[in-house]
Amino acid sequence: MHIGMVGTGYVGLVSGTCFAEFGHSVVCADKDANKIESLRKGEIPIYEPGLEDLLKRQIESGRITFTTDISDAVKDSQAVFIAVGTPSRRFCRDADLSYVHDAAREIAKNMNGYTVVVNKSTVPVGTGREVEHIMRETRPDADFDIASNPEFLREGAAIDDFMRPDRVVVGTSSERAQNVMREVYRPLYLNETPILFTKRETAEVIKYAANAFLATKITFINEIADLCEQVGADVQQVSKGIGLDKRVGDKFLHAGPGYGGSCFPKDTLALTRAGQKYTAPQRIVETVVSVNEDRKARMADKIIAACGGDVRGKTIGILGVAFKPNTDDMRDAPALTIIPVLQQAGAKIKAYDPESMGEAKKLIDNVTWCENAYDVAENADALALVTEWNEFRALDMDRIGEVLGRKTIVDLRNIYKVSEMEDKGFHYVSIGRREVNPKEASGQLKATA
Ligand SMILES: NC(=O)c1ccc[n+]([C@@H]2O[C@H](COP(=O)([O-])OP(=O)(O)OC[C@H]3O[C@@H](n4cnc5c(N)ncnc54)[C@H](O)[C@@H]3O)[C@@H](O)[C@H]2O)c1
Image (tube, rainbow, N blue to C red; front, side, top):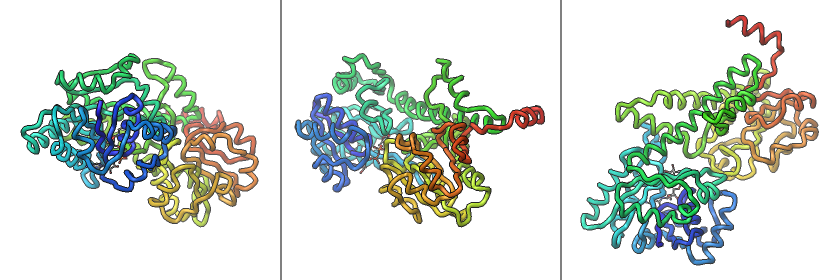
């Protein structure tokens, strides 16, 4: 099949490369000429494990090409995917659909024969209808269908998620379009991946509902962690105790500094806006959004408290700034809230991240960027572990203890054991695992009973 991909960011690039691996012939278009120039050489502008090798193989096979000219991606393609960004608008916090609308207009101008235009960007319900309207206005004569095919890949595990998804959702009532989409996903179909055909609106709601549900799960366990800290319970054991129940499931139950990234923050916000627009308020998700925002700032307060309540003139070392490991994506990363709050409180910041420092430097000022975790710890008053990269999971804590001024570690990802860190003489603070003295705990419980 011939497939066009409009937008070659995270989703467009991974999807285009994987479609080429399926055996399709893919043309990827992006209006960013620098990006296209690098991609032609097989250089990828993002960090995603396995992607560079896979892409190089597809370029060598000739199954994938890159262009700034959208007509090359559209004219011979049976399916053209829209994979452009849908960021939150700055003031009203709705999803900004201007990139989707522009892409729709350009696709319409260049279509040649029956085409299925597939929206892979995450968009509010009703966008498929709007795109159809824009395209009909631009090209009343054209023969096309619009389908919604939301993407569920996770950054850091994107290729595996795309090649072995839990399910593929396709929203279109047109049988002709369904047949084209069956061909697009044929290799997965043969693997018995569930392919769910729905109405377009249903597919659009599925994507926002899925992300909002996961964001809710994270926020739920974060609040449970706050309770654990007050009563001397252990949130990791609570997660295990509830996660073993198959109705709950054990994923997305790790307490931490609050969710970030390119999807959950903007998609939860956009869902609340859709709820207001259609007078179906999404009150649970509204609460999730505000609890999560507060939490990121509270993580900075937690670090300040661990430093005795005052960080003026103190140096805080930050380990990890990306919103999660295995990505260089800094969009809405908790570190972007935590570091400025610490700086406003008078702290000096040293930091290290294996992949995202290039991006982070553009977004945060006055940080001393280091070469590794030990450089960060050198003469710092406290160390805060913000992103759980594998290389931070087995640090030589004796070495850290020797160079870290006051031996204070705030582990916002719970990757170390409380007892081991305390045995090594650290003042160790983590999430939802404060070891309170049993008498103190029973006193507190009685006091509030
Ligand atoms: N990043 C993720 O993990 C993820 C996962 C699932 C879904 N999504 C959704 O997929 C969509 C894309 O996300 P992303 O992270 O890949 O975005 P991105 O910002 O990384 O990439 C978007 C790309 O589209 C290009 N573009 C914009 N308008 C264009 C036009 N008219 N013609 C050609 N190119 C154009 C931009 O130059 C950019 O390279 C969003 O709606 C997002 O919510 C993202």
